[in-house]
Image (cartoon, rainbow, N blue to C red):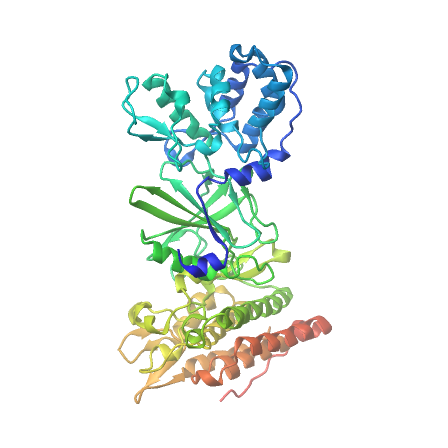
Length: 571
């Protein structure tokens, strides 16, 4: 594993979260004795009634959520069950109480793992009387799923043994079982193996799961709010991976509430289009650096997992699910009727600049000086890569898709989309021979995003989607019709397209234009969308400028609410 992953707390978990389950969930489950005496049949019926269909298995198998398992298999019910088992008739009351407590262990120093899952599987298949033997052999939940292996000595009719998946220790408690009984135990135990995802205090957990593991996910169909020119980066597929929306059962995760802003347990699962471990690590590495920085509006990685069977492997990342992209928000709110959105724009512009400054400075500062310009940038800032979280009154904008951009290296300029389908936001240095990309390349793209934001507020969604792109559209130096914001002239130098300058002048003349919007447009044209990248503001300077403008909004309502249209000479 790459050293940088270890340094930032990337931890491999092969126990499906069992230790965390014992530590975090089991202590919250009531241990009070149940009313009446628990019986194997009664508990079996409760377990069966708690099973949830696994939507991804096409009817293959169900699973039992961990909160339900904890409610059914607790110290109280175990006391009642054990007292009635023939195999426990010689036990004292104290011995029964100790075993009941051990079955329901909460991860103390003496017993790291509980036996809840093993006991549930035994009860479910009518083998409750075998519980004492499993306890005596210490065949706890960490043994699941048992794996088949060639026997050291042949026994029974079935030519294989069942062993601990990691240590290889044989499960001798099953030696006398018939092949059908063992297969039934293996199949039934799968119902209790859905993983428990946890976000540690530092870093990110990576769960190594067998390909057949049931995941506690419920697929959610979401309407794609994007038009065909944009992508909200939530439910789509592409060269880097597929993203889908799921609900994770609430008893199967514990994530930082300051980071998870998703409602209804909704999360984004990104499945990478690769089986190569190095590609997965490259995707995860930059995300680890701000996984626990809730004050930075950078989309947070919550956990990762792999599904493996032999050499067949798939890699998956879990993120908070957003309410949509900024582009989708523009589409769903095609026309702003008052000045309230300006205050939101002003606040979120500051947060975006601050987060980008962190990315450019704090993150880049950890790199060698020769690597900072290569890696310390986003490289793909656009409206579809800004995600919105939270209700309208508290809506926040987060920068996303760092893995997609991989903090683009200078050497990979040619790997970005070809010119025929190149993004509108790309900076001039992308097209100029011998020019190099840098952190200030992000400033051009962010400036283009701010222009579109101002266009949406002043002119509406139709102008963002159709009118502004069409207005600046022209053939580039390769004869391809393009709506990029610059033009490459003969002699290998670039200029801002005159049509872009004209459009900005029209925005200044809009009847809705306020002083805040005037200053934002001036900032973009004079300090961000400059062909000479060295003259552009850096992210920290932009942060301070936007902070000062936001302060004016708070001090003087008219600064952002009073229309004051006029013409400006930007030449």
